[in-house]
Image (cartoon, rainbow, N blue to C red):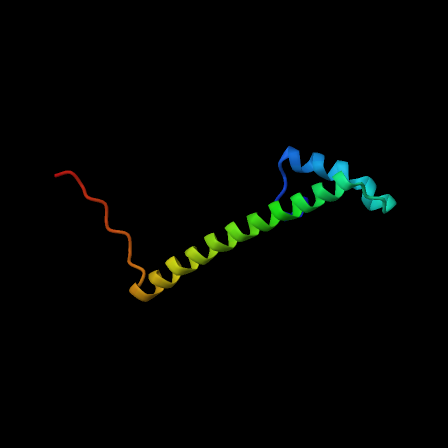
Length: 78
């Protein structure tokens, strides 16, 4: 889960809570609900990041269509 963008302390605590079900194979109802919630949270982040990436792709495509220009020379006080 940490690799899926959950570096916040809350995410680490969730991993610690869920570790017993991974090692024993026994899952309580509350553990299952927590697992589902974490998955939904990760999916929401994926959806948001995908939308942001797609918008950036549009900006990049626009820049490539209109061309990249040199930065203007700085104006000197005269």
